[in-house]
Image (cartoon, rainbow, N blue to C red; front, side, top):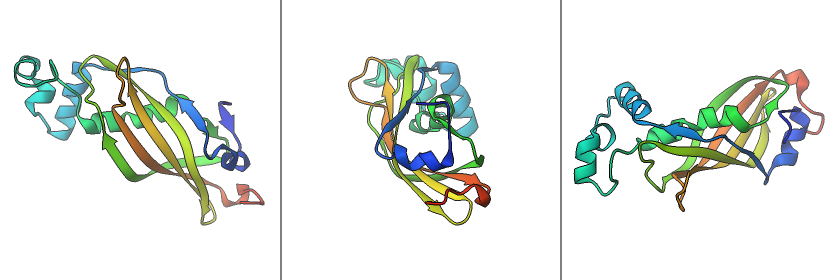
Length: 162
């Protein structure tokens, strides 16, 4: 996949896996910072001793929303940049499923398949990605999601066939 693509080429990517990110380590420090930011200090995330003794996980696990929030970093790591893009906007999710807990110290990566791309208005392209977050050495993914983003661009850059 090229590092940069033109707006006119985006629709050719529908149905294709267009990026697999590098592995990101989800360590206890990251989990603790996320707990502080979200005020979610449930012991399964922040107390390694208690989580090891009282849960089936063998220790602490990342918040599901932490795993989900890493999609932004994964996106920046592996998806091609649209040359004409002036701004990217997170529009939301149609579906998110948390499949496997991410244990403290685990590595995760994102896999992105472009499910759809539709022009909306003069300077917007709505892109839907089917995303899977893999956990290293785990059979099931951490999560799957249908993620919708908007690529903002100058309307004069819109392709003739778009």
